[in-house]
Amino acid sequence: MNKPEFTTVIRGGTIFAFNGHEHALLKNGVVVVQGDRIQHVGKSWNGTCDREIDARSKTVIPGQISTHAHIGAYEGPRCLIDGGLKKFIRTGFLHFMPQRRATGKSFYSGSDHSSALRQGFASLLRHGITTVIDYYEPSNHDETDLMVEIATEMGIRLYWAPAISGGQYWLEDDGKVTLTLDEARGMAGLERTARFFDIHEGANGGLIKGIVTVDEYYASTPGLRKAAKKLADEKHAVFTMHFLEQHREYFEDMVRTGKSPVQLLAEEGVLSANTLLAHCIYIGSNSLINYPLVDDIGILGAHGVSVSHSPSGYARRGAIMESFDRYRAAGINMTLGTDMWPLEMFTEMRMASIGCKVAEKNYLAAPAETVFAASNLAGAKALGRPDLGRLSAGAKADVVIVDTDNLAIGHNPDPLRAFIHFATADMVDTVIIDGRVLVEGKQVLVCDEKQIRAEVAASSERIWASYGDYHPHAARLTDHFPASLPAWEET
Image (cartoon, rainbow, N blue to C red; front, side, top):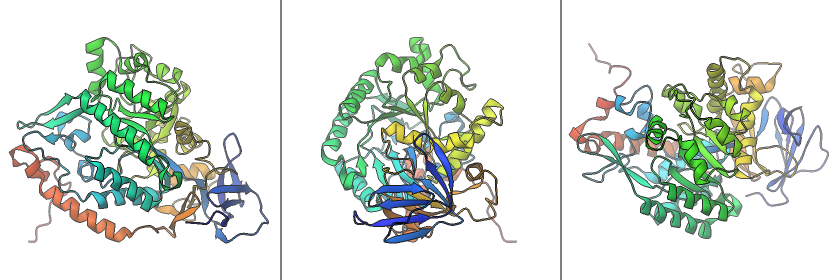
């Protein structure tokens, strides 16, 4: 790790700097990093330095903040693209998350958990994400320690504590998936989260911070949600939860109570500025729900909540948010997450913009500056971290340099618009977190990418081959997820 007095100057290129109010375009300027902080951003700098990085023909941006991720190898969702069982409609995770009731076996039994975590972290780093919120629920203390150990090893800024589940999905022998609510399990998980804060808060020089995560609204109770929000308030932390990611969440609550899930959360008192709702797609006004009897968006905005939008995964399932701009206009702090593989923000920014333009039927909707700010400034606001998500003096030295000197980007009169709509994650050249260079020359420095990919490939093949042991009736993986192309047959 760099010494506190170590000074690096990033010189030249196109810099998306922060002027105290918003991002501003700085051409051929400098960013000066001293220790773990940005010392200076401007047109020039004449001081001495220990290292100079030539950013000419490159673009310099603040480290991106993913407000929702599941760090791992995604062995299940990799099978789900362009497919899935019709009974789960647009929901993807129900294909893999339920535990077989008869055997206790999980789809992920036999996974190389260590390699899966390293691949997830490596993907985030390689693609320019410097801060991430994760939703992982470990099964024991060893897995909790492993998460902290690998996050420390990889050097990322991690917001995490063991996720809290207030229920259990089961795969029954007849192939149906059922849900059992279990508030006692949730309360036990809440105690585990509280212990995590006591033991690990501020670990790895402050890069690891706690967060209170209720895994899912649908699999929790009002009592658990209120207790979790209370803990978050006591710890001055963020309260987050999967919310309205399944269409049935809305219908079942409306039938049962005559109120929308948003109304119920408001009555529970869990909506406030430190509340971050992941997804929040299936509100009453969404055309796939088409039950706009309540102004759900207005209620969320009035409470100042944040929403983590991960558009690419929903677009693959045939759903879009309706719409990013409407949520923002109501006062909701719209952030971006990387919910689906390959854990990169470039696709999410582009899909957030395009999805909103389609939903609004307006090419001016979700402009480049809005979705770019969602990838950094809005995430920092959700976390209560005005020192993140910006290139300005005094901010944390989380900096990403993108090689935009290529035919895909070309020459454009508006660098930010070109960046949002043409740049790709593979163009990330350098990633600095807390002043430490973790990616350089498009290579992750803190792990062996090739070895990790090989280990995950072997683990994935084992999981896919044992699908029949997990699923009733000895179904093969290809029975539920057939290949898009037939196998070649030599004639």
